[in-house]
Image 1: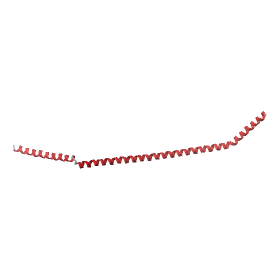
Image 2 (image 1 turned 90 degrees about the vertical axis):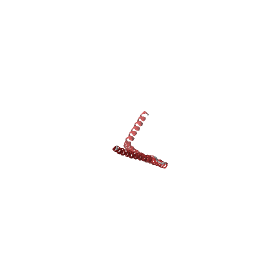
Image 3 (image 1 turned 180 degrees about the horizontal axis):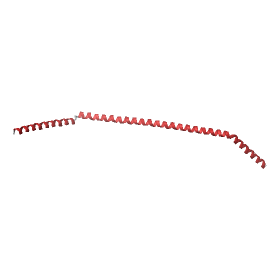
Image 4 (image 1 turned 120 degrees about the vertical axis):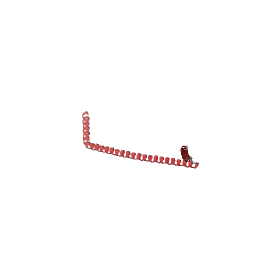
Length: 132
């Protein structure tokens, strides 16, 4: 019986120690989960500040992206305008070259045209003279 009492005593001490430890663990956890009003307000303010900071960062990123897109669009428009101007200059140069070529041909053909006109006028005058 004395052995049994010794073991019961050891078991009782162990149960008391475990329950004491459990109560302390639960108590500490409960104390950590419960906040005072000031702590709650501070946590809410901190959360609001974090949210505002993130919102500001997102807005800044959006603004940067918009500016970047605007710059790209402006650069592309300038490039397109430059290409159009170059193409127009090329077309104008071709037109001028073609016009100069036509003027040159006309100048070369003018004596022949004048000779044909004179010949036709001469024939017309001869026909008119024959009819009289």
